[in-house]
Image 1: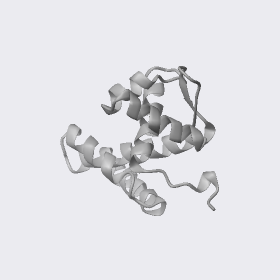
Image 2: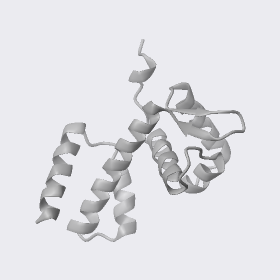
Image 3: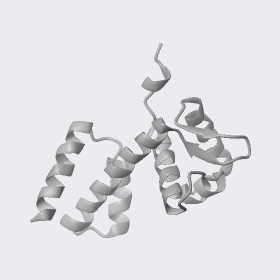
Length: 133
């Protein structure tokens, strides 16, 4: 039987963590509301609630009934990694390939979930090297 920390999150659940992290950064607060997530991801509140319960059960966040949502250390670490991946890929698409920002954002969101850690590190190093020239 797998330990909770070994559970592989779905792409959708990773998107929730990323959204929570980005909303909290934009609003300069640790707490995020279901409504904020629903609006950001264009998902219904009941759908958001289901995903939040799964993330809370797996200790990625804390959600008090009818209260704010806050990322745990585990959730914050993963959310930062997902956001780094997204921004790195998006930056490459926009600055190197000259792809329109809205398209770059959507496509980065798809790719961020499938690259291995080792490939992502090499990719990020490559981007830094070529953009410093």
